[in-house]
Image (cartoon, rainbow, N blue to C red):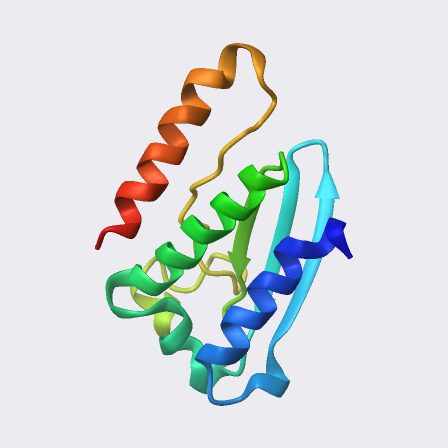
Length: 131
């Protein structure tokens, strides 16, 4: 259970946010780059997950960064574009394979020379929370 804290956290937050919590699916994949959480939601709930100007998605990614830092892991979130969505059409004609852009935001906790970037990452995450 401790290994899946990031997945459990994301599922909980998204299910509390959307109107169709039974349609929320979170897949977790671990490799040498870190943890990749892939989120699928009901197309009607996509706007709630992304938020105005992507602010909700950005806030969720910040919180996942903090959860990842606590567990010495690098956590990335990919939000799958629902079938039939037109949101991606203005951004390259939907040629991104049905996936929304990954809005970035990862922090590595490998120690050593990255220690300074980790401190900045935590400070940035805390600053971002002061919306």
